[in-house]
Length: 136
Length: 80
Image (cartoon, rainbow over all chains, first blue to last red):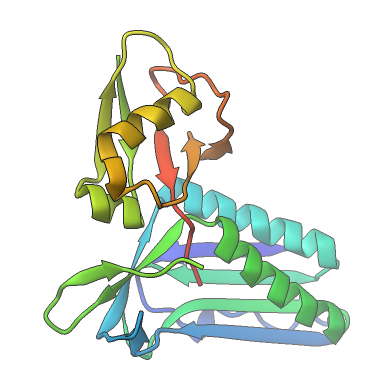
C-alpha cells in the first residue's frame, strides 16, 4: 500500500496512518528547512517542481520501495512552494513487519527521491532574492 | 516547427527564462537538440549537467522529437 502527495500547504501530522495490526515497526521521517543554504542565511526555501512528472515519479519510487522491502505501507508528502526556515518539507511514514526492513527502506526511498524526483530548491534571502541551491 | 523546452533550477537561473524555443526545419534527436541548446546558452550552461524528459519520462540522446512532445531539461534534482 502506498500514498504519496505533493502539496503547497503545510504538512499536517494527522495525515499519518492509523495502526496496522500486522506491522511490528513504524518509522517516521521529517525533513525540515535549515537556516543556512550554500553558506548564506535564508528565511526559507522555495521548492520548484515539475508538476506531473514529480507526482508520477514520487509515486513510482514509493511503489518500488514497498515491493523491494516488502513493506506494509509507505506514505510520503512532499511540500513545495515557499517553506519558511524550521518548517517541514518532507514527511515519510513506513510500516513493516520488522524494524530492519523499515530502516533500510527509509534510507533507500529518500535517496531515490533525491536522485529522480524533479524538485529543486531555491534559497530565499531576507531581501527576497532567490538563488538556486547547490546540487551534489 | 518550434520545439518548446521547459527549464528549471540552475538552467532557468543562468538562461533567465522558463521556456526555451528552438526553431527547426526537420525532426531532430535529443542529441541534436542538446547541441543547439549549448550553442544558444554558451558558457553560461556548459558546466551544468542535465537529463532530458519527454512527456514526463527520461529519454536517451537517440530519441526523435515529435512536434507535440513536452520537453524538459532536468538538472540534478534536490528534493527532500
